[in-house]
Figure 1: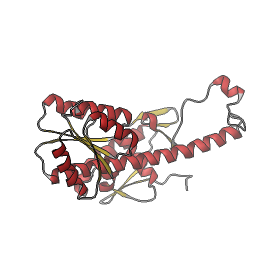
Figure 2: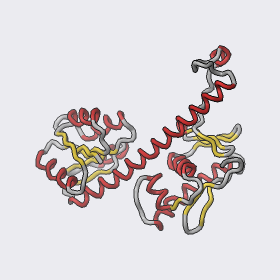
Figure 3: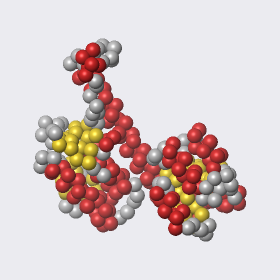
Figure 4: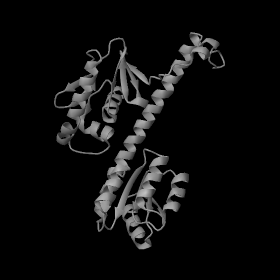
Length: 274
């Protein structure tokens, strides 16, 4: 995994960099916010670890700039001390963690490892969404071509241009249920329900792994982005599953989530699907 360490203090930068390199991370370095943004733009960075007090900008400004370029970016901030206002800003703008010096090598490694778990989870989710979207886009084009909505060159037919293309792009279907990831919504017939990102990702993960039971430990790791033991994981996942079930039932008594007691959850068998 590729990390970018941003710190204007060369000694501190060297110490943290070596602590991370010893456990196998590839660590790039930058001594200022501007240099960090240049590295971030041209390199494939998995996680940014930045001091808040930089020579040319604050770490909070750097955090905002990075998150504006990529919402999935993982940023950990470090500081000698912080005010309550700065800590609130760090969380509000999406910092994964805030480390107060002095911290040990174990502290920094643990924080980075948690951030990397989140980064991997986000990448898996993004690849899953991209795959589903490409598949549905191809199927939609085939159906539209067969029904005359587009011509052989992929252009909208005159009738379709006059009426306007359909506004909704469904990512996938689960029986009578349609998924709209851009809105974090599910729909069935003329009813729709808004899900939280965790609820939507939970449903999407179970759909992608239908046919087997996913443990609560696995669901927390893949959906929430961190690792915990099975007992705690059950407490974390249970309310999200309960809320998701309630919202699906409100769409027409749809019950897709099966609780396999003592093991985890799976997606129910759907009539008409292989």
